[in-house]
Length: 152
Length: 407
Ligand SMILES: Cc1ncc(COP(=O)(O)O)c(C=O)c1O
Image (cartoon, rainbow over all chains, first blue to last red; front, side):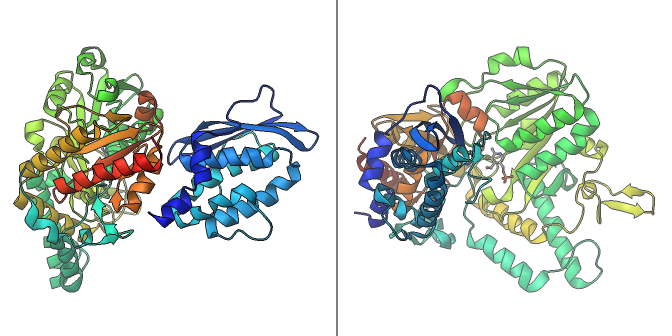
């Protein structure tokens, strides 16, 4: 019916926003990080359990729109089992994709469903918010990250 | 419902497609659209009369000064102020409130005094008072709102409106709930304990007749851009005795009567509060807007806006999983709502694809959102150029949205 709408709200996104995966706190997280969007009041908290430099478990909680919930849900699926050092390069690719629509080289898997977001400039922040929180968790930053103090 | 069928063509912006659908502009509480009369007044000023005001002796400066001061006299009539000197031009509602906080507030408040607000204030009628309280040692209190229905709990005034209250500042119409507050009654109650009143008329001035003498308020503020005028211009009405006793705020040209190296003397009101070159074109554009609104009749406008809001409220209440905010009856021209399991921003994004401009978010009412236990709402806000057919279409779009998200 509306191509751009179904580009933005792909079936995978609708599914993950309705039934988010890993949507629970962790008992004894090695790291936590908060992401906050002051413009809409959305808030997410990421919980990470590390084994050495490997992300052994990662979960989230919070409230947000369909895009930010699905993004957080898919992020947890994607980062589980990865090394900390892999997060920043992945962040950069996601950032590039949601701002330009370019997916770049190599398979992004399910994360590629967020390519349609770039046509909705007001919603880029919703998709990238959980990734900023993940970056903060990797860097061990305690302070909440805000969509208004990072780019974009 | 009073018919405004003839006036659609006064608003060229409304005649366009957005995302392939006819634009339905329901974000009027954020800013209104501008009629040709206003666009042409700005154009004519810049084409023929542009010059700086008050200082020149030449013809163009005379014209600009006359137009600028003529607009002030018009604003005084618009509010039924006693004299043009009671009208101070500002950038808008926000700057007008900051002006009062930084002049009247700093001169009159001391530790132990209270500033009474309500729980439904826009950030611009909250944050300046928080800053003033920090600066002076005065304390804030809040008249509560009664949950989702969004009425002021006036019964609590007996307890809250003590002689320690030096200022009672509140909104006329809530930008989130649509509540129309009993301004005259609140002002009278405040006067009885000697408190000064400030009315935030941002959501009322362009929608209903606002008469500062009948309301009995000390200060009243509004923004030009929400009442068909340009951005960058707004009004502070102040009772003359108060304005005269207040210290100036910003220093510079125009606000002085004489200047020496070490000290200066202030100009008379209202110029004492207008440092520097003002928004001359803005005042002239606002003049055209006030003329336009009063030609239509603000009572008719109010009846129309309320009827659209009533219709929207009634139709929305039939939707599955709807949560509506604000009073069931007697609301102003807007409706705030949530659909179960659909975030306000998702509603707004999808509605936009259908050409319907809504707002989603906290509406600069974060503490109220917290109190209601939500992070945001979606809001449809109406003006006289909107139609019942647009409301019907908007409801259809809401059903489409529910279908889209499978709720
Ligand atoms: C009730 C209320 N007060 C104050 C304001 C602030 O107006 P402005 O941003 O024009 O200064 C608004 C505008 O959103 C409002 O709705």
